[in-house]
Image (cartoon, rainbow, N blue to C red; front, side, top):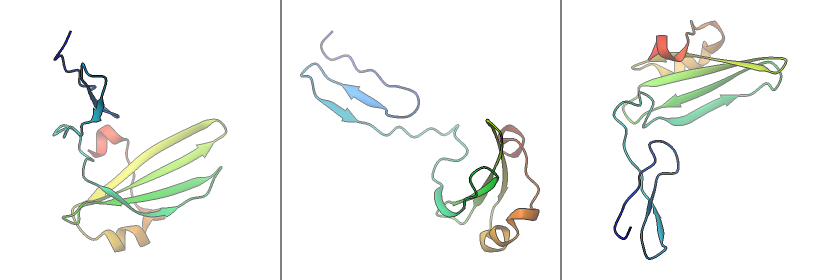
Amino acid sequence: MSGDISLEPFFNNEVSEADGLKRVLRVSNPLNPIEGYQTSDMDMNPGSTSYYGFQNKDGAYYIMRAIVSGAVTNYTYSKGSSGYDAAWTARTTQTYNRFADEF
């Protein structure tokens, strides 16, 4: 129907219009606790344990740890409101939790 707009709730949000044009629409999700964070550092060790550091513009951070065991990858997280550099340096000794428990 002409004029209908469809929004996808997650990635690749698009607005489809009757004239055949598609435009990307970024929708802010206040329920997404990691929105606004950007990659700061990566310590990648394929087939083993890797670490990925993220910060937001206010200095809050989280570090994601990925542990690979065979075909299974386990992701856990550590976060803080400041002190990213010290946390990144100590990334291998941080306490990590499942996403739902950390955020």
